[in-house]
Image (cartoon, one colour):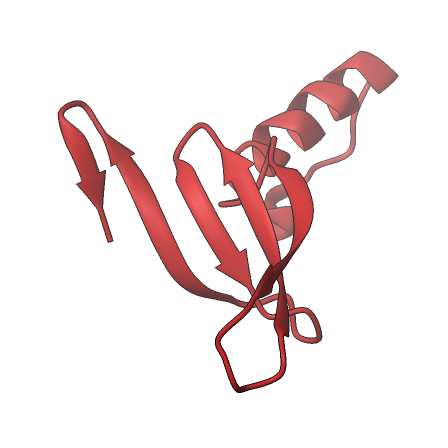
Length: 80
């Protein structure tokens, strides 16, 4: 389901339901976001956005908000 498939709705409940289904497919849906710094001497600190959600830990570029490193949760460990 995507934005192009949204039809006319007979009720606001139908709209909210379909809208919620679309949002839940987004990779960062339900994330908590944190501003973090990577400190490596002697380089100046680098700032990033860290997103935590049910699928794992995601590090985002602070300007583009594109994920550049993901640590995905698995049943018995992690996958980078």
